[in-house]
Amino acid sequence: MLNLRPLVHPFIISVIGDGHSTSLWYDNWHPLGPLIANLGARIAIDVGIPRDATVSHIIHNTSWAFPITQSLELNEVRRSLPPLLSSRVNESDYVRWTLNANGKFSIASLWDKLRTFFPKVGWHRLMWFPGHIPKCSFITWLAVQHRLSTVDRLMLFGISNSNQCSFCQGSESHDHLFFNCPFSQLVWDAMLAKLRVNWHSRTWSEWVTFLSNKKGKSLHVVLTKLVFTATVYHVWIERNIRKFQNKSCSGEVVAHKIYSMVRARLLSFQVLPPSQADWVVNEWNLSGQ
Ligand SMILES: [Zn+2]
Image 1 (cartoon, rainbow, N blue to C red):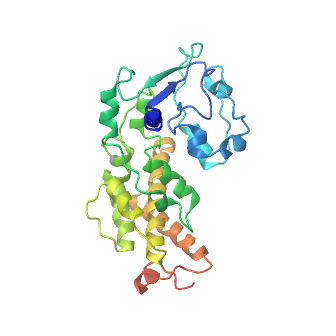
Image 2: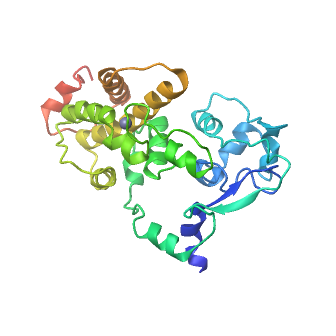
């Protein structure tokens, strides 16, 4: 049974009351999961809160008091804090099983989840590679684990909210947002044309597997990974801008931002990776290298 603990843990969440019995950094109370396990021990140092702090450390009266910083990671943590219910702030925290509507554990619900759980296929190679863009890899790393605070996930944490996609009339989930949504498909189409890669109507998980298995250090392989992570990043940022700032850019503008970011990254390399195809250098305007 002990071997099952890592599989079971993600589905047990702590619902916050007064925050006194939940570890701020180690327990699964935040939509991003246990914060130190997922974001690294550095996060506690960066924000200046001890590693043995409980969640009560960042509650002031009935509101969150999480420090404001310039860090992308810490901003994601702050923005996706679950709601504090004023009716519960004087009560104890409790744990809840997320796979059943009644919050109680059952073997059937766990089995049902695990048999469809996204398999690990070495996808770390897709985001952590020489020349990666850290903020894009970070967001992609969360997306591949279905850890971003999409509204379907926030609803698991008790936030009653509309689950409507920020781009269309669909329901927001990782699969929808990064793959099935007409907006992201438009962006992917534009970027894949720049890579001369066929769409092949893959699902999100098939696409992740396909790219994770791409081996070698050629310019095209590096470029493909940079485009993939930058596209996930920019779709997520555009989604947040629409959701929280009420502004928007077209798919074409987002695609151009991705192109500019990836091209700038490639131009920052001291030596470009070897390329077997001249079209890559021309398409991405890298001949000044
Ligand atoms: Zn959509």
